[in-house]
Length: 241
Image (tube, rainbow, N blue to C red; front, side):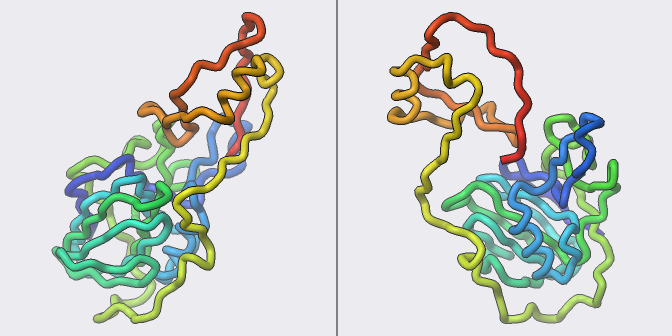
């Protein structure tokens, strides 16, 4: 049995603990951006912490469960409804076969996680079931979810509960959900080439995240930053975080 994707949301993807240790072969680690949130969602479902789940970005998907399924949602706050009834995050929930789960927009933050009991039974690639959207590596050819996708459900470790338990976690113990947070800027190799005015604009003017941003990095649109003299930028590697 499976979960059917009725609407994909924005850049919803399969993620787990990723593919660490393969950078020497040119394979990125990938995996959940907010790995503690995914691990907690898996714990709420009784899964191994590295079980495959869904990473939701900004706008969640609409899904139909094809069998009775336990699930949990953690991470950035967003509204979710099961068959039109509002349900809480950070708690084990029970869906009946044929139930539809609908997500809204995230209030703060930009990534939430859906785990299902037993995990998602997609074929691993290089030891992981996560999708590397940049290199198109992983299940579904490494792409985000599309309407009509069917995600197989693994067998649960225990029979499904008739009713979900009433206990829950308090996400605020692990995460800060304040709407505004300062961004820390660390000087890189190119800072010495920027004019004083450019550095001032960088710290005082507004910038907007561009549409062509992705899981590798965010492209910012804003005031032009001028150089002291023409220079050719040398490509530099990026590290997680």
